[in-house]
Length: 210
View (cartoon, one colour):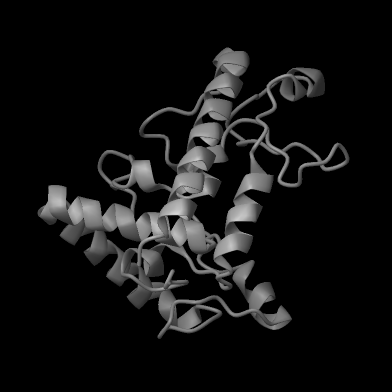
């Protein structure tokens, strides 16, 4: 389902702010940031998607079906194949695509599908077939980022980037993510639950319904 208009407008602002922050961080990083099309190490391994991520991916698939039905069918086939291969160990519901919320299920997710290629990844080009609709985790990966917006939490960045850089050089390239805005949007739509990319691509996971 589509996001309500007011929420969709806020999501667009969120994306614009995030992309602007990424561009600024990349400018400051210069050659320290080696991310480029075809570098797909970060496109392997399962990670949790919130309702906004899932909604964007579903809308991205709708647009792809309209613009390039053959490619959309290929992406969906990869997603179905991913679910068939990794679904038996999925720590959640195969019917809804929602991740389990118990502590044992969360512990299992830490080791789940860590080497699996994202089904949105083109294995030939190494590029994302749904780049414009990619999740927030993908949008912020590469530059130094604090996953919690406070001075005490450490900076994390792609292990292929900033090789040989000092802590001061890394800190000077920090990307500030508008997490507060994302949190406000999630609170407004009040849609609990998380999923992974493959389930979102086939229409499962948290669904916005109003």
